[in-house]
Image (cartoon, rainbow, N blue to C red; front, top):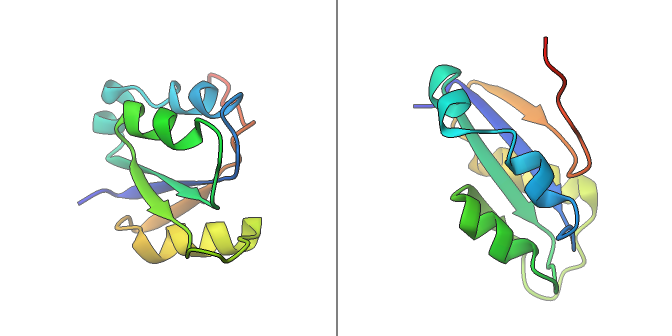
Length: 97
C-alpha cells in the first residue's frame, strides 16, 4: 500500500503533463512508497495518452460533467490509497532538496 498519493488534476495538459510525471521515476516511487494519480477532467488532447504511457493511475471525470480543478482533486482523493495526499498541478516542478 502506498504511503503517499500524489494527485494531479488535469484538463488538456498535454504540453505540461509529461514534465511533471517524468519527475516520478520508478526509483522515487519505490523509495517513497508513492502512487501517482492523474485525475482527468475530460481532456480532448493527448493528456490521457501521456498518462497511460507513464503508467500512472487514472481517474476519469463523469461524462458530460464539466470538471473544475477542485472536482478533479476531490475525485483523485476519493481513489487514493495513500495515508498522505499531495496535490500538484501539471505545471509544478519539484526542486532538489
